[in-house]
Image (cartoon, rainbow, N blue to C red; front, side, top):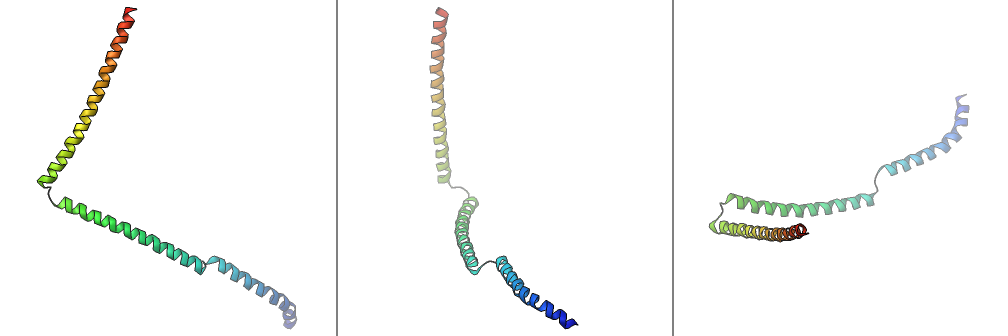
Length: 121
């Protein structure tokens, strides 16, 4: 009696089982990355790490230079250089203010001329 069930189910099971196993293998293959994709990703990560290492080394050298500058008190020459830079900047600002003052004087003269012409009419 159970042999009859096996004879009826066997052709169906022997046809569906390889199809199901094939579909499962294809599904699993899509779930994981291919070896070429992994190697490409690994090389990209290695390249990015190398770039970041170079940037980090540059930052570390800048930090060391700044730490040395902050640790040591400024010398007389350094203070004189900075004072010269400040005086140069201040001179530029003064020249700019003088230029604006000249422009205002010119505008005031022009307005006076317009007002006197307007009053005469």
